[in-house]
Length: 447
Image (tube, rainbow, N blue to C red):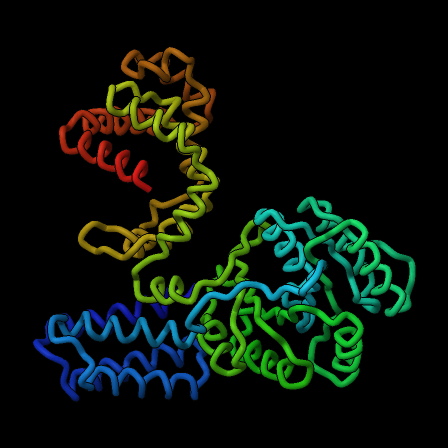
């Protein structure tokens, strides 16, 4: 998401690297390019105007630090302004004074409300909080059945009822949730293709009866300014507390993310970054700002890694590397762990952009990056015997042909894997690599 914008920003800011100081002329050219980049990304024109003016004032003002280069000064200012545009700080869900806290999801039809309800329930479950899902969409056929299926898939409870009376349904939900001590009730509501008075009356009625702790507007980031305009209408006519943006992983212009907070005055609290229920995150303005500026999103990557990588297992792997005992079996286990972190492009997107090392967005442009390659490597290793995984040097032509048939991969790929693995083993023997492993081990223990 926002890859084009990120590329344009970095190109503009790199232009300032060759400048000795910030002047009216060079900052004018840079701001013009930034302005065009934001407008092309479908950012609201009023938001863009304020953004550009703030950067101009602060870049040429007295608050610029003399110890920084013009490039560093402008990057720092632009990052701070992006964070301000995105909402300054991350915020938690509102809670009621007593259980359960009711979360009401609203939005237009097709924005992903029902799926977001399931994703939010799973997110809360992983935070150690219990929740129950319920559908208050009485008009859309099979709306309840769809939510019930989602509830089963994410492993949370669903409130089922045969009643068509809104007051009775809500009364039943509240009674059930208090009896079982749920932390949250997540209520999915009806939507329309367009905002109309009938929808608003229905939602106002639900809101009055439910008295939710939080009303979350679910917006589809692919719709750009339409999402911003809808959010503004819902905020003015119904009253919302926060926003959840869906499909931020898509190849969209992404202007909604950069406009919606400024226009509505409401914070983005959650973002959907994939099709799976687990692809749902708390929104951190600073992390997205860093990603746009090519600084990556290492914190999110670390959080994912903490969930998937076992600390003791990682220590064992480090010791094996130090003792030159790292095998193809260990290599395959690490590949499986990496797969759980997400696609390679997602992982690379979280890395900072360091051109000299080919890290970050520079790797994204590499056509050789393919998630299927990890599966192919695993298939090759799985086709080996235990002895072959431990001692790949014994792999002669006959053995490699057998592995090729078993894995369905050409002998050339097997040769490449073995060659690269043996090169990696040589690399591990080098003194500086061992020092690096010891340093990381020390830092992890300190942490």
